[in-house]
Length: 281
Image (cartoon, rainbow, N blue to C red; front, side, top):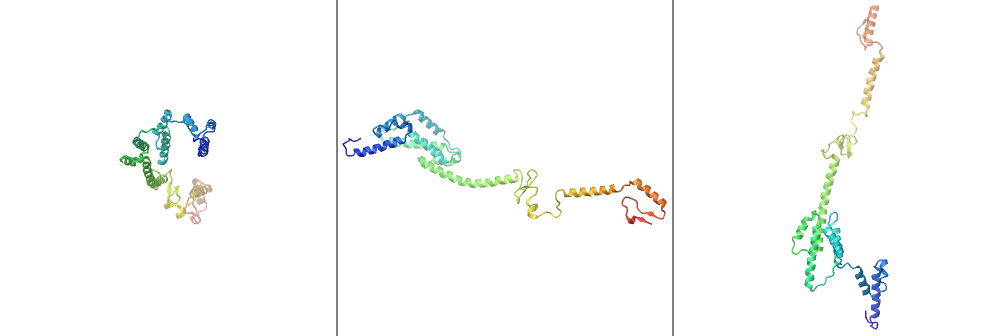
């Protein structure tokens, strides 16, 4: 804060009020009253840092590192997996307050940290990315974490394109298997039925005998009609037998009686089936 008599004091006071407003408006409502009457933005910042900072909070560091060690790609795509790691690393960085003695130490530490993050990222990838993982580990020096992610993402996109073609073929094979039965050829049976390519369903016919394509056969009879005709024929035969009231013994007696009483007539045939031509006088 400059002296109140300094020409820039009014400018500083305006900027200070704006920053205090930004800080307090980003706090939870229950916390704001504690910091509203502090005179400078630095006072607000220092008070919040002392109360809530996670720097050198070993429980917070342990929790973040545990999440990093256990995080794997699994069902996530590479982009989601990478962003999950980056969010944890950024939060972890807030837990450390580094004081470097020289610039070289800082550069060396950042490079070592970058390599460690590449290792963690590669270790959590799925097995389908083993080839590109080995290719990256063969580089010396290792690429940065962002370069590594970019190469892995391109490989994932390439595999999706290739697997898309493969899946189409697989889906077609699965459809054939479902349609034609796993253990059958094209016209294998399923529950006593045959596959019809025209109907696209399991029927009692195939495409070669499908009525919708070739029409009904000339000797076709409605289901049950043949049995009905046979039953009618049997009934008529039975009725014709039942309609003739005499037995064979009775007929023989009648023949004898007629021959003895009418000598001018002769019987040419005996039996059940007598017609006009069977009698001769």
